[in-house]
Image 1: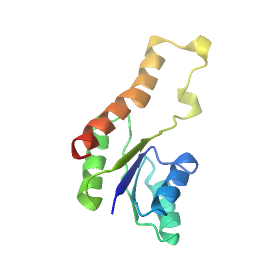
Image 2: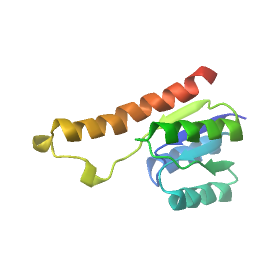
Image 3: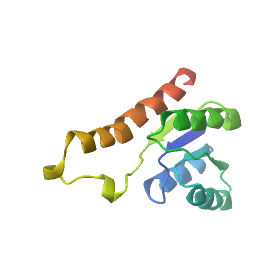
Length: 126
């Protein structure tokens, strides 16, 4: 059985992808900050007879993210498909005319560095 890891799992795109892949025989690993929300998503997937588990981590915290992905591998085996789509809160995104080096660095860390951390954690086993 193959494993899908969704980094930045949420109620929209992430859960939809989880359902689609799960219905095609993938185990689903959900990674996001909020354990309570993750538990809700896992329950929804299990009700559809999809094997799923949650792994809490903040994508802007590389050690947390690396640990979560290591726990995915320990639980389900190597990740076959990685989906990365965290969505920052609207308070963290600056309007284009208000972009500064500081808030751009925050977004770079969130969107780019988190993706790099995720890929580096799973790519060797792919």
